[in-house]
Length: 168
Image (cartoon, rainbow, N blue to C red; front, side, top):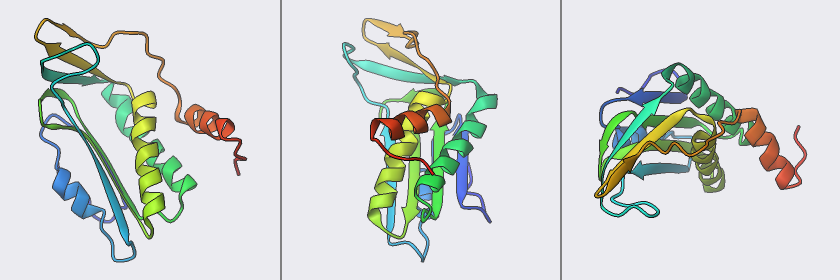
């Protein structure tokens, strides 16, 4: 996975290790005093599941990149001073300790970089059709619990209504 040139948005889906350091460096811009990188790493446990040994991600690939781009666009609409956004996700097998998702953001000031990073990861988790399989000591699960994939506009509207915000 290589960083793009001549654009301020980098989105990607990969079977290979994610370039965390490259994404962190790619978002840095001389006009920005802040960059935030969220690195979601595969861990060895989850709720009720000890000794997780492997994660595996599957995606409805035709939908992922357009949704990543829509998330980046919504983040830019909410925080217009954001300079660069990277949204990268692994698919396939992910070993414990490897990165599963990377969100990197730069902006002139830290508050917008933090807020946009949180918005991007939270929105990705509820709007992008990516599913996780966990394998642990005594079983495995594709996380087949009911999951309603929401539209990005629904998330944005619902969050704004919950906070009593007026959308422009």
